[in-house]
Length: 606
Image (cartoon, rainbow, N blue to C red; front, top):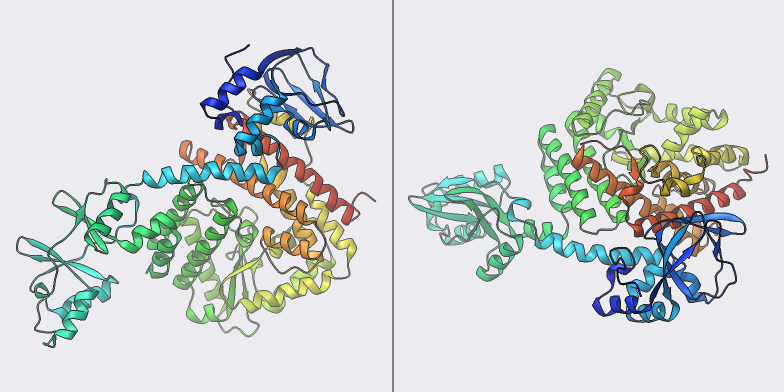
């Protein structure tokens, strides 16, 4: 029997030593010639096949639905069902391991993750993958250093300074504690000391800070493990540590900041955004959002949750930037909104600016002042790392900053005289999400679209046809996945292949049903309630979207680390066998969904 079985590929990479021995004891090697049927629909399932060499095609009702290459396995679902539901044919000469059914069943009963990855549906496979990510998250946190957390500036005052003056420093610097230098001693004075000073009864003008400062500091080095810092806080019952490198004080580590780092960086970033006094400070927080996304993803956080957090953080970022560049009167009489993936809460890495501004019809701010504020806002976002929109969909473009009645007229024009450019603008606007100012202005203009769309089936059909904007290339995406080793053929644009058809198909169905939500997941949930999607298929659709987004994010982060730019494509030769398997499942769901959209809008009738 063969003994060189490869245990590095999914689902075998999760087996323990005893389970690996079961595989060695129950495996054999088989050969199939080109064109030979390995397993036909209805055949008894006696073996699980793991390809060593060659390729195998899977057919359902005469249509090829999947293709398998080296290190891929098939057909676990037939093992469970007892008989094959598809036909598997050797595309070329195939050499494969044959793992006996009894052995497979024994592994499934011993190892739940193995079973989930082998034959379960997309949702369960992703659940098993999430379990692996959770384990990775623990390793990521235990490897973090003190310097990785947010360190507050160390403001030092002289021991002879009055309590009143120290309170002034704390207020001006927005800090709950300052360090106190008293000769050779270094101490700390906090809000607790301030309370004690008030209760002391003496005049605060004459009370020196050295009298109420604590000189028993607990310090830690910036390169120390973060969990050591938490242990020190618990051990000494303190809420902050002095981070020092030799004699040099680097900063203060607050307990709140430490716990926030270990649980959720978003709180700290939000605080810094709200407190930013200029655009330079905001730019620093914009850079932290990107690092936050990378940390969350590599720590195993679900993509949908990342998208929601990024949307909330970016909304705060854009709102604060608008507050810094726009006059107060303009802020009060307008609504700043974002669109596209940002509006849907699905932007993970920074993309082009997509934003607009609606003003009240009676707005008093002059056009020149509005134009200046919008130009400064677009420039600020550019400095934050959001490039200009190539189509000019941004507030610095007069076409995307209008009074409410004027904006409603433009929306009517998009709807009543639908041209490709107008339908594209409508699709972008439908995803609009208010981030600053009077949100009722956006709701007012959006109501115009809802009212006009209600009785226009032809318009909705034209709108929905965009799901086929990126037709499959010759040979289909199955072959693209398997054309590994050829520079031009082993890349796949996930946005075109899967993300856009899901997003726009759901957007089209949601527009017809007058769904107000802008997020794709929220729209899917609403469509289930409306009876337009089954709960089971909706789950597959959501899982597919989030998996594709996660795969795109993973590829983008890798590109940023290596080249500093994001191409938006994934390379098949860099996907694990499990990722390729899940990608096939996800794109199959996309194919089914496009058929549903075509049927509901009668797109195949023309």
